[in-house]
Image 1 (cartoon, rainbow, N blue to C red):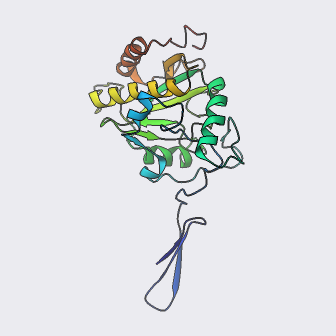
Image 2: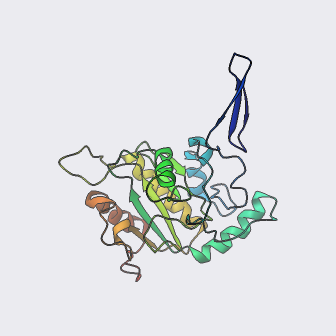
Image 3: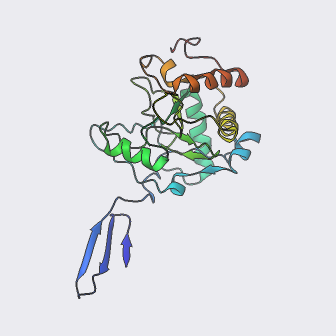
Length: 253
């Protein structure tokens, strides 16, 4: 059997002397090469970035497919890294630029729709009703403590309604809206430790970040229930622990 992932075609001998071809979703190769991706090992990464790298999973680890970039699906880049050859060159250029753009972090939960993996969320966001170009969040945090790369950090997120510029999106792969009629999740020690490490690592590289809020705390999004009252209690505790302000305090709520 031969594969050509760049064009999304697999061919094989059917056993009857005929060659059959199957078109499948293109698995990522170099389709993100011109977009900046978060690098825990960058020159700006210090204590927390280095620790994060021990349990950080890139897009390739969860078999992300290439974004579906077409009219009507936003995939807006904060910057261009075309012509930059080494990772160090990309880090120096991108981190300085993005530090001027980023001011906040929005935290979400994946909810009770069964979307408890990055792969499921990406499939829903690309092929579901919202018809997005890619997974909407920049990072995912599992209850086992894994931190998973989502949308490239150099691309504007699609996780808030009309308020994504300058805000990094993180989703807990869990349901923190505790309703009596369905099965919900409790926060795990591993997930809590991982999101603290992730936020501290982001602050190392982008020190202008000063605002942290749940989905429903951001302007234009106050009618949402995400990340549930249970999840919101943890976000309030995270703000206190990390010495960050709420969207309301910074005029963004």
